[in-house]
Length: 292
Image 1 (spheres, rainbow, N blue to C red):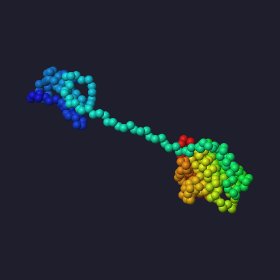
Image 2 (image 1 turned 120 degrees about the vertical axis):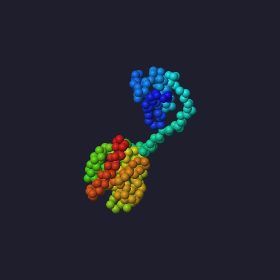
Image 3 (image 1 turned 180 degrees about the horizontal axis):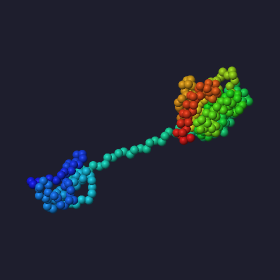
Image 4 (image 1 turned 60 degrees about the vertical axis):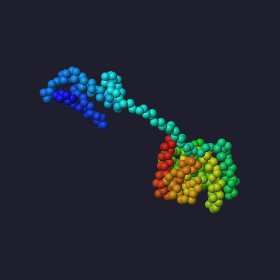
């Protein structure tokens, strides 16, 4: 620039952008001389503005900013090689969650199963007049299936898997997790009353278990709760004590199973109620997850 002419102030852009000489006040057509220098004429001002905007336009073009521009402000720009967009393979949809239920066999229904259980005489020590207990409650897709230990004479007489004070306590336990006896199905791991001198317990379990497994397949409960050590060990096929089985979920034929204490045991040992309440809360939380 010739000597004696003022140098326009520069504006700095952030990052790696270069400095561009822009007039401090392009709209001011009447400039006062600075440092006693002569003022610019209109032609010089226009040349400065044209050069400044040409550089700014080139800068915006290199940054990918597009807007209508006059040919007077357009400078030859280097063409960037066109890069095709990156091709990504299509993302496969996630597989549907596994069905956590047991399909019902087509060859039999609950009515036929009830008749089969009522006519069962597999155990030689059972009286011909005995009627094995089928169970009571909601039969089709219950929220909870309760499986108690061996049936007692009181259970058989009242035709209720949990009878007497144990049944009353169970009703309170279910109410504490917002369930009623109409929401669940109750049954026993052994369906006939055991005599006090019974020694064929393994044989009785082996005779009753096929009926229970088929009953579970037909009813398709959302959750199973075994109440008592005998019922828990039988369905989980283990010899572990109940204290080691409770407090968490197991799986039985892809159905969540919780083992806990029998209500009759809770009446005998009230200190166990705290542990049983924890098990019930596990069930309640899972039912909420299932929106039940």
